[in-house]
Amino acid sequence: MQLLITQLEPLIEQQLMNIYNWQQSSQQAEDALSQVMEALQQSLAETLANGSLGLSGSSGNVANHMGQMAMAMFWNPPSPEQEIPYLDS
Image (cartoon, rainbow, N blue to C red):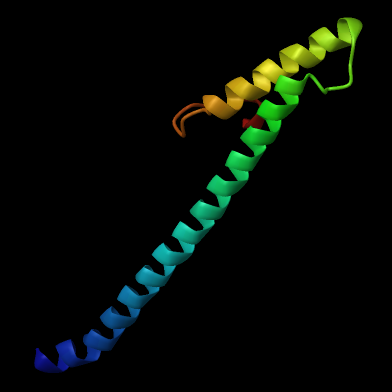
């Protein structure tokens, strides 16, 4: 039994280090993604606030609705359990 423990111990330590490194990498990726999402939300909010979509007339209405949909998507993203129709094939 002791022989088995001495052989498994380095493997377990390596697995723990791999898990720790994976957690660190995942956290860094999540932080970077959060920063990008915040920048996108800010940019979209500024664009909508300035009305600088560059469209007028009926096209402006389309742009307005598209902007509203984009804001709704950013502020209310689908949960992982929800199906996204255009991704199902």
